[in-house]
Amino acid sequence: MKLSKMLISTLREVPAEAEIWSHKLMLRAGMIRKTGSGLYTYMPFGIKVIRKIEDIVRCEMEDIDAQEFLASNLLPSETLSESNKCDVLGVEMFRLKDRSGNEFCLAAKHEEAFTDIAINEIKSYKQLPLNLYQVQNNYRDEKSPKFGVMRSREFIMGEACSFDASSEGLDISYNKMQDAYNNVFRRCALECKAVEADSVAIGGTNSVEFMVKSEVGEDEVIFCSSCSYAANMENAPSNPEPTQKEEFKELKKTLTPNVKTIDDLAVFFNTTNKKFAKTLIYKADDKVVAVMVRGDRQLNESKVINAIGGAMKFELADIETVMKSTSAEVGFAGPIGIVSDVLLVDEEVANMYNFMVGANDTGYHYENVNYGKDFKGQVGDYRKAAEGDKCSKCGLQLTIGRSIEVAHIFKLGTKYSKTMGATFMGQDGKNQPLVLGWYGIGINRIMAAVIEKHHDENGIIWPMAVAPYQIVVVPVSIKDEEQMRIAEKIYNDLKQLGIEVLMDDRNERVGVKFKDLDLIGIPMRITVGKKISEGNIEFKLRCAGENEIVEICSVIERVKEEFISNNIKL
Image (tube, rainbow, N blue to C red; front, side, top):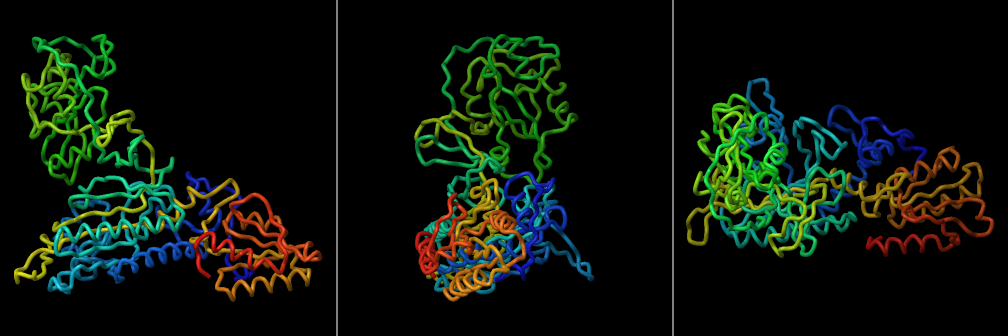
């Protein structure tokens, strides 16, 4: 492709709205243009990258015998109601009506569409196992779209669903998909970590997220400093800190006027935050849920939601609810005499001795409180894992890092098939529910993650496999007939090899061309200039600092070397 014929609109200034590198560089390189809040148009260079990533996903899906189809993005509301999806996603689901008043939703995911195919098409165990996938636009009414395509209202997903006759079969399909996704990330030059994740939003028994470490990532991930264990903070367990056994002391109610926070209480009682247990009160749909964690700990809301069996709406209780549950002002809640539908007690609190809590009486706290003696509740792990906690696998220290989620896989089991009636006839002649796995990989998130990991101050550094074009030929002066003749020949020779090649034949200064090409991130550059009088040209890798002087007759072989080193076939 000749750049003089292309729509190229690079920006020198960083757009004010862009906060992270991928957003800045995608706008500056003319990859995307904003059309509305959380909505973007992919420009010619941008859509080339998207299609490259999609093709890699398709290739890996075909290798595990997954079959592609394409579901509608407009889904009848009654279909989603069968799986409770509208309630789960709530206001994030785009909803509309047709001229007859029938309700529809724009798909945020397509589990129901996949399952509907199974209901109508899968009749016998002889058709199993089966794996279907699609690459499709999805929609979510994000409250606060941000970071460009990283969190947008319209996004591109590779979605897949495996159908098996048994949980053993699901294990095989699940492992195949995990391997396929790892291959996708390797080919896109992304170092990805598979981490344990929370399954409550979509259901099922197990799930794994694929995370790319990045300071701009929205997810906090716990990593073990020694073994391979990693988990999303939402799901990460940690070994409770051991406590020293004490003899029970007499319960004592102490006046603590205007002392409400844990830090203030630690000063008041001349002790540490670890000697307190705080009681937090939540509204979960129509229930009041009280949860206790140690004074220095943070509550993990995902663990609490899982413990109560899920909730459509989960939020801290309002002042009126707190006062009704405790008969006290905010800041004095405690477990003794609290009025709630559920009292959850973190296991660290249950193992403490002679600790302090709110007395459910304004201006008072209890000292020498002990679980089992003074109150009871549902004991479990409800705290957030923290830096320095002990790994649940090997017992060594955990560390915390931020990461970008680029894929998520679930073992759904029979959750959707039972709800929607997706069954097959087994070998025994009886109908039984299909066993499902669900898999999603973010195409535009991969694009953004690649940029976050592969860029410098001059622009994007695309890996060869996903670059919009693999090489560019730059004649220094388009008015020099000999430079243009040699540039045209190299350009045409590369095209004949099937290489995606650009020729920058714009009537611009060579410095302007180089700035644009570095910004866009073309992996290889051939510069045809004055050195042609010596039979040489310049060859440069975007990821390297120095130009190489290469003989004109050898440049095609030099290009081939880069394809071989990147495991890309010509």
